[in-house]
Image (tube, rainbow, N blue to C red; front, side, top):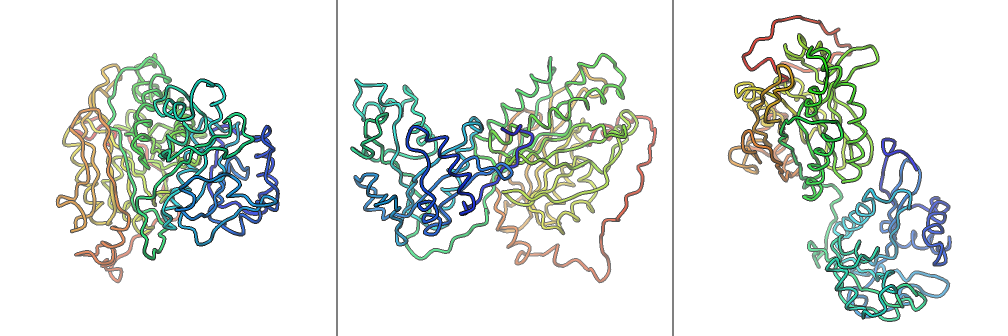
Length: 529
C-alpha cells in the first residue's frame, strides 16, 4: 500500500476499462463468496446507470467502489429477495423509470481500511441521490456475524447491534452512515450461511426529494468552515502536541466541517524543548519538525475527511533560508503550500525569516480558497489578486500579542471580505508561553467575515469566538450568495473597478528579500502579525 503522505485520492465514475482492477478487488474481498461479477454484468450496469457506479482511486489504483441500480421505491421498500434484483445470467434489472437507488455493493481494499474511506464513497452516493432527486437509497444488507449468536432471533441481534452491544461489520457501518432498518428480509440470500439467509432492508431517505420535475445541481454551494482558537501550553514532545491537533480535527469531522484551520505558529510550544535560549536557534529547532507535522496532518486530513489549513510553521529551505509557511492538506491526500509574503520586524530581526514570492488560489472540493498568513492580510493588493482569480474563501491564520495588534488583523480582514466580496476566516491562538523567549502572551478573537449586503448578517460577521478562550467555531457559508452579491448586490466592488485608470498585476520576478536588523519594539507589532 502507498504511504499516507503519497495519497492522491479521487472519486469518479467507473469505466469499462477499469474492469480488470475491479475484478481483482472483488475477487480478493469476496474470495469466500464466489468472487467478482462477470465482465458482461459490470459492463451492462455501466451502460444502464453510469452515474451510479462510483470508484475511489489512489492515483490510478482502484481501492474502493460502490455499485448501484435504479428501482421502484414502492416495490423494493417491501419484502423482496436478491433474485428480484438479479435476473438470469446475472443480468441486473435496472429500472430507468425508478424513483429510488438500490445499493448493490460497497467495498474497500483491505490494505486501505482504517481511513474512513468507505464513508466518503457512501457520501458520494448520497450526493448523487440528492442531485438526481431520487426518493431514497435502499439496500439489502447482510448480517455476517449473526451466525455467532445462535440463541438470538434476527430482531434481537439487530437491536443489540443498534445498541452497540454487538458489532457487525456490515450493519454497524450502515447504521453509522445514516441508514435505518425498515424490516427483516427472509431468504434474501439463502446461500449466505454467515447471515443464515437473513438480511436487513436498509433505507437512507433523501430529505430534499421533490416529486416534481427537478434539475440537479452538481456544484457544492453550502460549505462548513471550522477554526480552532488554539490554547498555547507547555508540551513534553511533538507527539503530545500532535495528539492535541488530532483531538480538534476529530471534532471538526464530528461536525461535518469541510475545512479546519489552525493558527499561525501553532506548534511554537516545541521551542521550549530547545536547549538554547537564542531565538534564532530555537526557531530553526522548531523548523526541524515541520516536515513531520505536515505529513502527520495530511494523514489526519485523509482519515477524518477534512481539508486542513495548518496555520503556519517555520520552513528551512534547501539554501538554508527560513520561511513562514502554511500548508493546505486536502482530504484527498494532496498538499500545497503558501508562504508568508510580508515579514514582521520581529520575524526579521529575531528569527531572520524571509518572505515568499507568490500567492495563489487553491481549488478544493468545497470551493476556491486563498491563504494569507497574518500580516499579509494588512496588504490589500494580495487579497485582491486572489479575488481576481475567483477566490471564494480566504483563510488568515494569525498570532498577535496585544489587542491593538489583533485589531489590525481583524479590521483589515473584514475590509478584505467587503472589498473582494468573499468570506474571510481569521484564526488565532490564546494563552501564554512563559518558557519561550519573547513569545509569552497572545491575544485573539477568531472570526468569520462576509460581504456587507442584504444576503449576509447585518454586521457582516458570520461567527466569532469568545476572546482569549480556547474553543472551536464554525460557520456555514453559501457560495451561491457570492455569485449573487458580485453580480446583483447593492454595490459591485469587483465589477466597478476603474480599470481605465488603474490596474493591479503580480510582477514576474520578485525582488530579493532585504535582511534588516532592527531593534524589537514592544508596541504590538513585534510578534508574528
